[in-house]
Image 1 (cartoon, one colour):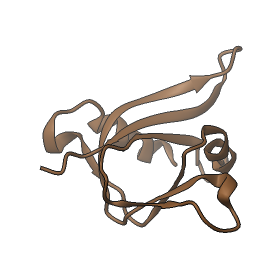
Image 2 (image 1 turned 180 degrees about the vertical axis):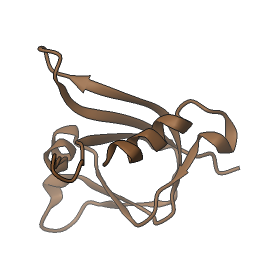
Image 3 (image 1 turned 60 degrees about the vertical axis):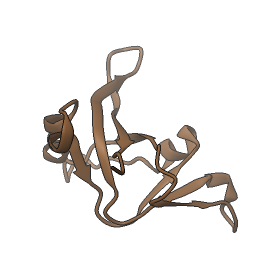
Image 4 (image 1 turned 90 degrees about the vertical axis):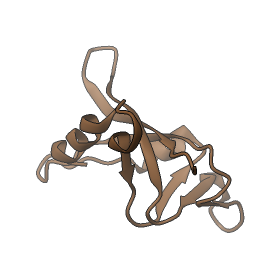
Length: 114
């Protein structure tokens, strides 16, 4: 993600109600394995893209598929529906032991279905 995109998440993090929500466009591929998810994270200094890891707390029994069959079972893939609505809980940089940024962690929670 670019810094501008990360700032959009920071701008709604922790806000109440509709102001704290973001809609994910396109199907979002996730993994139950943090290590697997990190293996997909990438950055490109030339284009201004930074490594980002999304951490989802998914409370909805709907709006997703668990892809537990096929050639890539090790990925433990969960596919979120196009347009899933999520609450932005926090945005923080994860640093190594020398203080260098490794990636940005964005914590999200599935929006209430009320």
